[in-house]
Image (cartoon, rainbow, N blue to C red):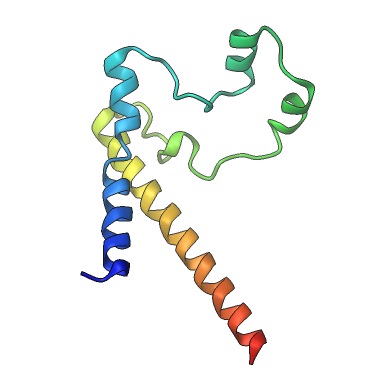
Length: 111
């Protein structure tokens, strides 16, 4: 099997198992995923909001907050799992497309 095919299979597998991030914290009663905290959770954990974090926290709004479609947060774990997989596929597609375009641009300049 070609290396390229192995990489695509690996990326596909990672996209399909991405909902593990939903199941494990719920099953283990672990709370939020590590590092995916907003200002409120940071204040709860640390006791204050770092000034840089406070200033920059409102500058970026995610296209798909919580990796789900609007209104799907209340629909249950199966809908959220599907949304996670779709989010992963979109993310991989955007990354691959961006790298492909960058390579084309850089390769065009060498000629």
